[in-house]
Image (cartoon, rainbow, N blue to C red; front, side, top):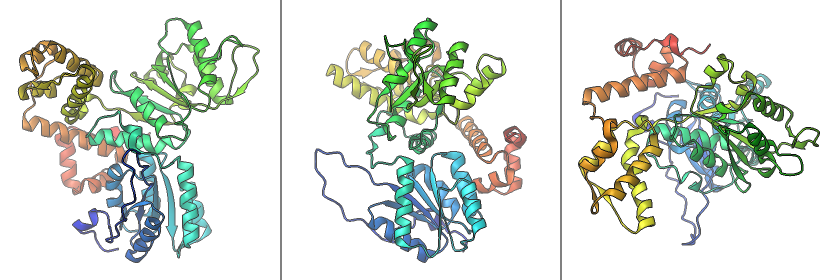
Length: 464
């Protein structure tokens, strides 16, 4: 494969545009399944693109693993087809990198070397399927349809994520991860500070899943009455079915799962292990058909270490972990969220309010320990107290009190961004400096200097 030019960093379109279909003005249109194709053979890349677009799939094509990885967060594919033999990073390397970021993403491996060891290695590495070149059209389409079916894609519209307002790449990465895992039944653990939107993301996962037409139920594990919490979860004999029964076929969100009493942790572990649930002692067991999403604002690993949370239950719940960023990590979303909250208030009250520029600047630079929830409450308070259509900086300062903060200097903001970026890239590569430097497009010497300047040690990111 020839070295990538700048043009290779964008999808190879081949000039194949889809003819616009008829669209009913009042009917939401289902989106097409998105397929990302990676191969260093331009002829095969073009052929696969033509075949897949002819079947009404949305396709982006790349001639290398690097550009393909860069595009995934933006394109959010439902399926990846990748060549096995490629320079720089081969198909297995790409597969492992994709699964480290989006565990539910299906990947089909293509190779001209259709040996049994290749097939075994690909499937053992987590590939959904294995196709030998030259790829037969019917075999290709059958594999694609099968993979999309297993991923849970059902031509759903993008409204699964509509309640989550963001332009942050960090949040987009989490949404992409959520969309990937939604097609599986794997338990998901949502971690993050209070007010970051864990319930919204759990509902989004449900909405993007094959279970979206079944119930979405929520249980707060922080209930003070243990007996009542047990009855709500597991039922109370024939008198009252529990949430596991009423949410049958759907999704159950366990909020503040860290607060679940130890005795109920034992019961929950038994349910997840046996895939059966009983409504009380002596009751007949029923098959478990509920997708579990757990949420916590505490570090469960620390609670496991201190004996406050069962280790076996932690591993059962933490099959896929999505850590939701705080509002301080996605400050670029604050103006967007403020506009969203003001629009909602305008619908409720019939009065439209706007923030003065200096008032919005105060919001954008403030500390938000309560995250998006606190911002929403602050906007509602400001709009209610404003004398007229303009929310002033003075009113915002009063509502923020001591939580207001000055904007950082350009150098401070740049240093903070650089340190966060280096931390993320070391996290992705498991502390592998050579790989991290390649992803950052820096030589090792410069990369080490950056790490030293920002006091980051690669060993802190190595996986045990």
